[in-house]
Amino acid sequence: MVNRAYLREYKEDDVKVAKNSYSCPNISNKSFKNLGVIDFNMCQSLHQEESKQLERWEREFRLDKLKFTRRKLDACTFSAAAMLYAPELSDARISWIKHAVLTYVVDDFFDVGSSQQEQENLTHLLDKWDIDEETEFCSEAVKVIFLALRDTINETADVALKWQGRCWMDVLKTMGREAGWGRDKVVTAMDEYVENGFDSFALGPIVLPTLYLVGPKLSEEIVASPEYHCLYKLMATCGRLLNDIQTYKREAMEGKLNAVPLHIIHRGGLITEEESIKELREIIGENRKKLLRMILETKDSVVPRACKDLFWDMSQVLHLFYSKADGFSSPTEMETAINEVLYLPIDCNGMKIE
Image (cartoon, rainbow, N blue to C red; front, side, top):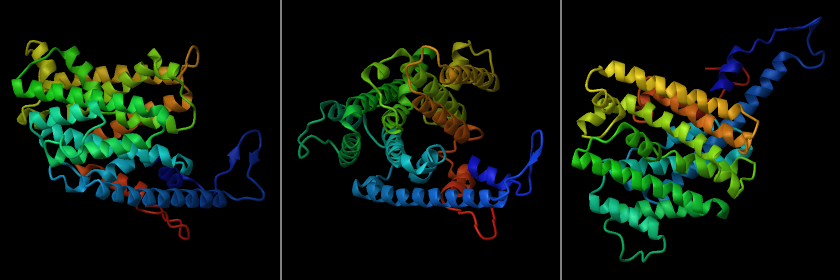
């Protein structure tokens, strides 16, 4: 999106002014702009090919047959392509997109597509891992989701395998806990809700495996470091609260716990919804400042900068999708941005930039 906007605003007749006015004698600004357009269109074509590959993956694992889940392949592809657009990051994008699609499937499974027995069955199977496929599934939906999860986790390099498995177990356990709170009408403490929520929001399975595919090697010491955990927690907490602000009305009708009404309850009912949202946005702002400060910090930092940038990239995606509405659940909110990044090439000849 930024690249497209820059090409739109790029002035072919501009002259750089320092001590003396300067323009390259052999290459015009128009040539630079043409190269930028060609590069943008080439990257877009690659993203379209990856999207076709991912559509085949969805069909292969019959994820498209699950009637209860939202189809979000375009939104997930956009979220990766807008941030990890370089051609050499194809493996990172595909990992990001597959896990993002699966988080939607699992989220909808726990929200509307399953019984308590099915939720416990899926969690048990993922924890057990090696199973008898003929006897251990309590429903077809559990079978489809488990096999898709297992195959996608196995695709990632061995070094990331146990971290991926841990991410998904954390997601299933925290989603199950939230489902139980909803069934039992539990009003939990705000700190407990947020602590549970930054895992249940399911950014871990998207971002953490992708970190292994952006270039720098990650040692066990780096992944186990407080810095690594703090980067993830700050990013995920922002995401959880941004989502809650945009979905609290719908979730209230569904009987789900949400930070907006929960914050009102723990303030003794003395603040309005608008005041609750304002205070939650202040918390998001503080967490985002801390995240950016950690990303820019070099002293005593053990996490490579390219990996730290990925936490910020996801934070940017979340703010884009949840700035005005729930952009993931309301595709029309993001339709223009998705089309510009994935489907609308720039006209090289007429230099038409939509």
